Image 1 (cartoon, rainbow, N blue to C red):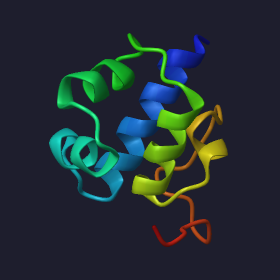
Image 2 (image 1 turned 60 degrees about the vertical axis):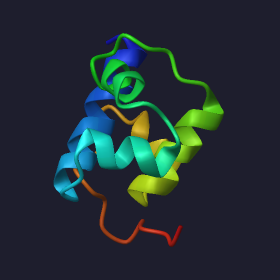
Image 3 (image 1 turned 90 degrees about the vertical axis):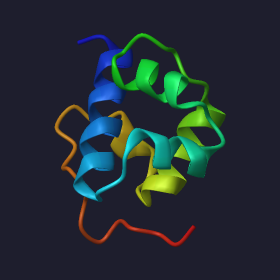
Amino acid sequence: MDIRKLVGRNVARIRKSIGLTQEQLAERCALSQQYLSGIEQGQRNPTLLILDRLARALEVRLSHLVEVDAPAHPQGTQRSV
């Protein structure tokens, strides 16, 4: 599987599971909504710094963004931002 599509799918799934819109998550990460949409669609290749910002905003470990079978919002892995 293409890593960009995997990351995008995981970001979108986790974002939806905590009830955030793309606009809300983008604002939390200081990204444009269009850029976040590109990440979720697997069209963008985010840097590690951006992935870290996304993970912090979603309150998950960065590793959850690249897992093949990542749960929607892993229990016990939340961290304060």
